[in-house]
Length: 149
Image (cartoon, rainbow, N blue to C red; front, side, top):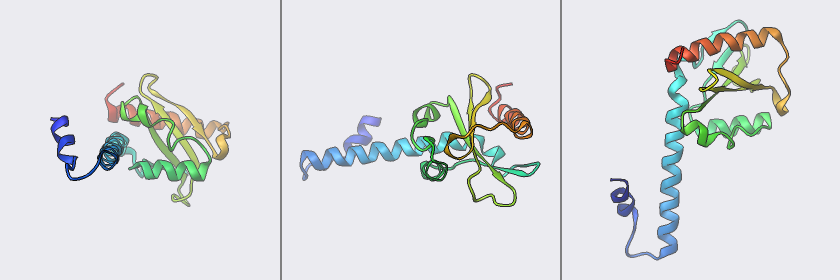
């Protein structure tokens, strides 16, 4: 079925370079859609508020890229394949007072059933016991959503 869909993209009136580019763009678009679908699997915590924080779940690769740019980290590209595979989920912790501003980037790993990476801007380590405890509470919610208790 996928081969049929790819063949329908080909244009016999155009050259090889045109068709290669068209197939690559289609593949990239489908990969981005798959990534977005997986990111959204934890939407049950999107905009969830806990203590002084709000959780933001990225909805697209553009959201990951924007976070990567604001936080100066690799979340915009490094984990995309493992996210598509359902191995990792990304969420952002924001201050309630300014939920549109980057504060902390977090990576939940399915195998570990926990948020295993959480950094401030420039990959500064989070050492606040209060915030680490909040991440553990968020982990419980994500495990419920994913049914991986």
